[in-house]
Length: 222
Length: 149
Picture 1 (tube, rainbow over the protein chains, first blue to last red):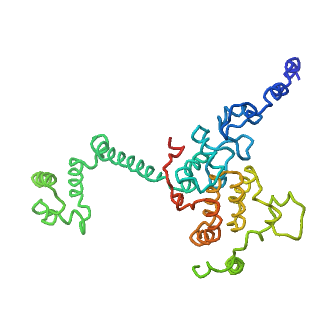
Picture 2 (cartoon, rainbow over the protein chains, first blue to last red):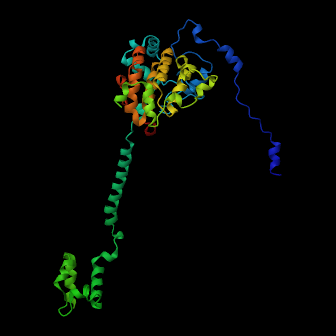
Picture 3 (cartoon, helix red, strand yellow):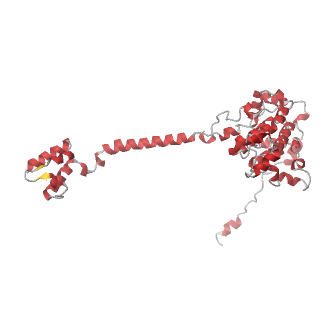
């Protein structure tokens, strides 16, 4: 109740629609443009409300239904409310020619007439855009960057190396395993000759140049 | 379908009924018929004389044809083309023909030649060139998509 009080004291103005002086404009502009001696190109005839529509559509002719006329190309609405192009002198002459016999129109005239009313044909609306190539290409670039980062940066930094892969760790590990004689039947202890303190020849398949050095040191220790 | 092209309209559509197609005039009442009182006699074309429609009404009709589930009959197409001629609008005629062609959908190769066969004489009379002559059966220009600008 107390919160509502200041609002009650303020007088809110009633919303009034922006009013135009409709009576005056209809009197001043009632006469169509053809009453004067100036000839008007077909497509530039006057209709009431033409100046109000000009910021929306320019000087294009309204031909169809639509409270707010705009132009679209689509198969579901093939005939939009307005023509696409404004009328020039050349197009005006074509329009006059259009009122006569259509057999006298050349193919170029017909195409210009079509493009004056419509931006694209319906086949062009259906034509594929080829956007999938851009999508796959962008994704391929990103994946390549990712692979580059992992292979170069991920493996180069010693911080990302696990310490259990280093030769020192593996040597200490093998020394421990042999001393404990683990896996004597099928595993590592079966490949070690405890009388001569060296590995049996089958161990050579597990060795590289670097690991063979550590094996030498191990056999020299004992 | 080659055999059926030289046969009358009624026979084509009776045989097509078995496939699930039916003539456009038998599909039901349309918004344009509501302006006229219901009359049991007379065909649908006589009630609505499309040739005397003005540009506004023609465009409404073409938008309705594009939204409706069927290919219009050649009689209706001829009346619409005559209406375009009376309104001195050539571009609208080509647009309407494009719509009629694309309404065939997957059966465009069957419906379009039949319709061209039926309306060919009228088109020559009025001076409308076919879509093939204009080159509008394939896309002519590449127009950039608004979303890619």
